[in-house]
Amino acid sequence: MKKITTMLALLALSTVAHANGYATSSLSNFSFTVLSGNTTIPDLSLLGVNINAFILDDFVTPVSDYSFSYGSPINTSLTLSDGGTTSTGTANSTNTSLNIFSSSISSGGYAQSSVTSDFFFDYKANSLLLISATATVTGGGSVTNGVQADSTASMNLYSNSFDLGFSGTSVNTYLGSSNVFSDPYSVTKTIKFYFYDDMDSSLQFNATVNSSVAVPTVSAVPEPDAYTMLLAGLTLMGFVARRKNS
View 1: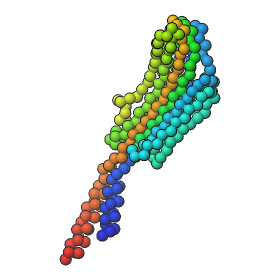
View 2 (view 1 turned 90 degrees about the vertical axis):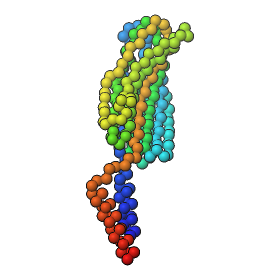
View 3 (view 1 turned 30 degrees about the vertical axis):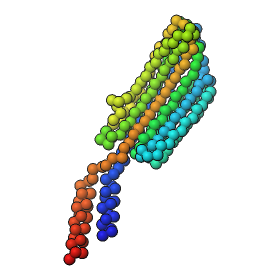
């Protein structure tokens, strides 16, 4: 009788499963070009990088961490892992190059990672700037099992004019709500924008990558053989009970 009860319990547990999900985002091949004017694009020696990571394994135990680095060269990475849930952020830079990457993977729970980098430089009036980078966002999971995979790659440029005025421009590439519940996707594109102002100002450049994935615990549909085993077990239990009563 104990063996039959154990078999049925294992069968019930076997119908509970985890789906798998992932999301990644990266920015690389940054290019800062002065098309006209007297602005000098500085090197990345004053670059600051912030990495944040968060996981919630099976949506029960939250864990978070962060790191901050300042001044190139930067070669830093932060990883959080608990069971099948992992969150990772990395940044690599020299005085002339920058690469940032975030990754979230889960087989049951929530993972989120973001990497933000920025630096300041002086802008001379009537200069035309072109800033570009290669953005890649990927993600995947099962729509049926409710996996949510979201990735974002963005660049922003903020301007504070010396006359106490404020102006700003930004560009963003984003895979959002229309792709949250999604089977695998992968997009690579060059994102870029131009900047021009007729006043001297202080510019803040910001680049951010973010990835998140949520994988719920799902109840899998039992195979036909499982139903056969269940029926046989119930029949046997009934037979044993009748013999015991007689």
